[in-house]
Image (tube, rainbow, N blue to C red; front, side, top):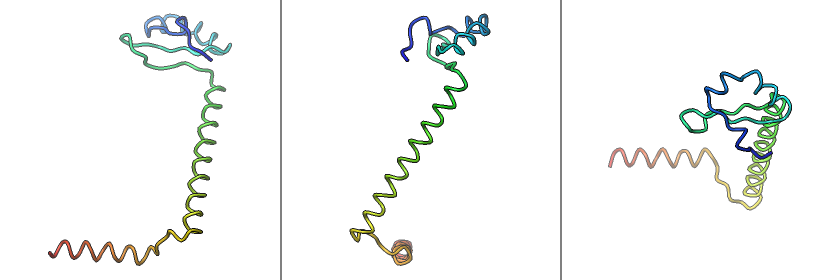
Length: 100
């Protein structure tokens, strides 16, 4: 949904017409409220906000699945190290650097 010039409202105007703005938003509009001439906040329908949150959770899940797939591919290709031995090597290096 494209934002038009009529969807951009100053904070003072929004205060004066909040009930009317809420009705417009409930009918499907999205409003951008400005403060000192700069974009400040948006007013959107609560159901649309829930939908946006759902989309974000799905995106995060897809990213996690992708990362897990990369990790499994690394394991299958042998690009892994044993955590205990790697941590021990890091501790040894830190100890040697602190002494030397």
